[in-house]
Image 1 (cartoon, helix red, strand yellow):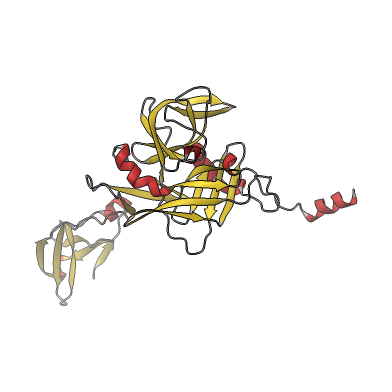
Image 2 (tube, rainbow, N blue to C red; image 1 turned 45 degrees about the vertical axis):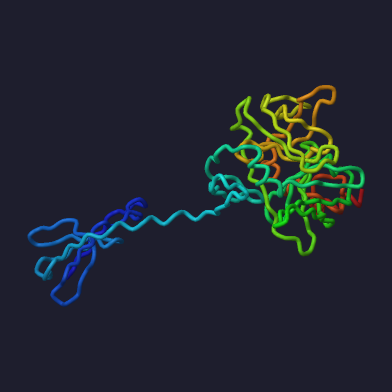
Length: 332
């Protein structure tokens, strides 16, 4: 009769690969395949993967040992994004989605602005309203996008222009069904959604980290200053902690002008590190951007900033008061 001997198993042990497979032939023409751990004069201990069997010697006819190659480890499932329009490299980026946006799961290589502009151009959009225009960038393939609150403040008629890459070049497409999803007036942030029927899957950007930036590091902006769409300006990060109206901003020498508002500020790995939103008008090379950490916080807590159609002037949605409280208010 076979005896079972159980040992505590750890996760690491369970994940290990058996490098040697042994076959123990029994008298009743049965066989056990596993790894022989120990042999004594009266019994043999065999690891069968999920437990250890102790087999009496008088039940064993023969033990055959066979070495097998170690199987390859199955890769962790992740989404692979191919860097397009770059014949000089076949670099791929592993990304992971966090709610409405995506981030890279490993450090991306630095590249030239020229190469990155070709890759990122489709994800940077122009946001138009009857009173003006600004910029924005797409967060995911479903058409959610970010811009500044002051770009759409007081507006209900919003359109978004996207530049789709086709075989013959760029095709400019205007989307008229744009919905406000969440706004933060004090943080100057707004999230929109393109709801046009028949809209394609959109190209989108990866969000990076402003905290990981170093002062003096190269950055660049894409936007529509003064309505000049798809304008690229390059500069350096002047400081990461410029206090303005009680908030900390990224200061950059990349040229920022009216129309850039709501557009992305990129690092040289193609990740958004900030949202450009203002400049000092009586100086040059004094542009400012909201750090991407504030944008991530806004997106992660977007329900708290949900736009209410019942009260368009309010950035928050309040629940109806309890019936008892409501009755007391009526009686007063």
